[in-house]
Length: 442
Image 1: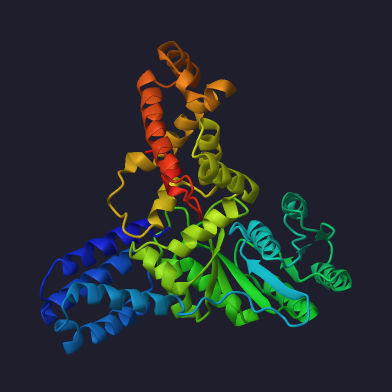
Image 2 (image 1 turned 90 degrees about the vertical axis):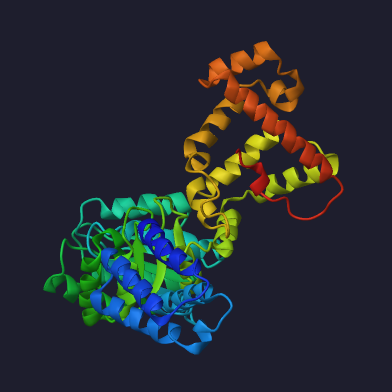
């Protein structure tokens, strides 16, 4: 997410950080580079101009020029203004005091609208708010079946419309069912089109009148750049949006839509889709997101991923064993490895850790490395995983052949595992959370 934009902004700001003294001409030159980077990232021209003007107004002054570390002050100003550009406060959902809270999901066909509706339902359920999905996209072939399948995967009920039927009647009956069932949130998946057209907007307007949604969330494909901003303006004018959800932020989107859409449309980005999994929907906190853009990490985001991925029972057993016995087997290592993998790609996770930028080589975060380690461990017998001291030369050769990896990799893993076991013995008797960072293969 924002990889290209982050890299270029970091390059410009690094040159400013390296200077002991910053003069006004230096600041203006640096901000010209920032302006160029934002425009190359497809950020709206007016939004870029206003952003640079605000940064320059704050940066060119005695407070900045007279500081001990002027470069760091400039970075702070850029961070604050990025957060303001993204919306200042974390918006979240406007929950109704009388359930159900109705969320109408709108957008063009192909933006990931139906999958996003299921992701929202999954998120609400995880928060303890029982949701229901309403399949009101009755035009696209198999749209209802897709939502039913997704609902089954996340164990959320789906109110089905009939293909070719009346979506307004379907939405109304879904609302009645949600009220009778005591549902906390009704998520209405509406029909999309290849482009904005009058019949679609009229249909959405009738659904809005029928269910009186508390939230109208526009799902935009971040890959479409400024086109997403233009389309969002059209939907907002017709329906009065309350927020935006940007999908496909894990792809090679340049970030222009994310940084432009609030400035142009005036509505907050509430969630971003960061993967294809039904867990891959993150709430947008502007200050945290600004920190990630500037490569300052996001510890809260890392903890949230760990909480979603961790199996509480497995974690407690592992912690009790290591802290109680001071012993750590390859079976335990494999359990911990799988929990780390559930948190997401390793290259994404390290970006959330402050201070690691540029310190971990790309090869170390290659997802294949973790798969190789898993293959080596799975090629061992259960007894070998419990008693690694049994692994003599012939056994290691057999494991290497079974996993398709060279013997040198098996030897390196066992050396690292031995070092890790020494560390675990030192933790014996200690109390507190067992960190996941020491369980990752190097």
